[in-house]
Image (cartoon, rainbow, N blue to C red; front, top):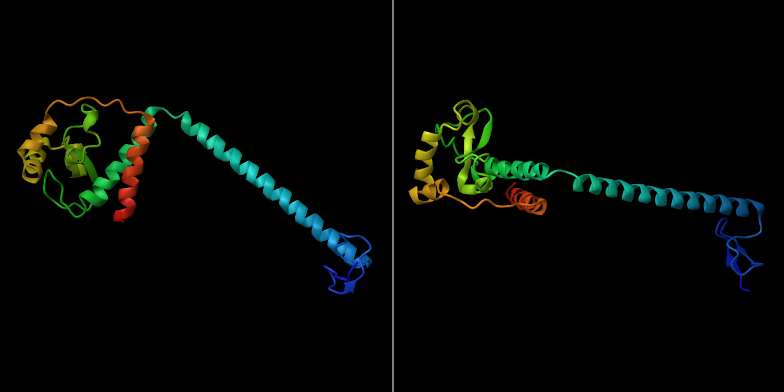
Length: 189
């Protein structure tokens, strides 16, 4: 057999076995064994961490699968409302009172989402409102309607007020809505 270079001390040696990694010095054999054992421990630890990570991911998936439909609707509505406040109506005053408030800004529904869930995610139905108009004045709907006509026109307002088919949304529909508005927010911000 040809001479080899020791993996530990770097000196050339004549191997006794074909796959011999280091010379016959006790220090080199011990050093190589310790490195090999540490590497094996690290490999096992990383493998164990990978398995634990996959188990955590599976648990999270199971938990997400068991969530009720209302959970997914609330997530989608929150993302949609955030898009209304930060992108669609950025810099606009309250649609009802016309003032720029320094306080809370809400995504106020013209046709409320409790009575008209089919319009919950309709951009023409949701505009920036200040907290006093949206909560204290229950939407300040008369002023809201007048200003809404000025923005989108009477035909569109009458369409919002008209009858609509109730959608039967599933979890996947709400997830798609949330993903869509997340993407719009990323692009805008």
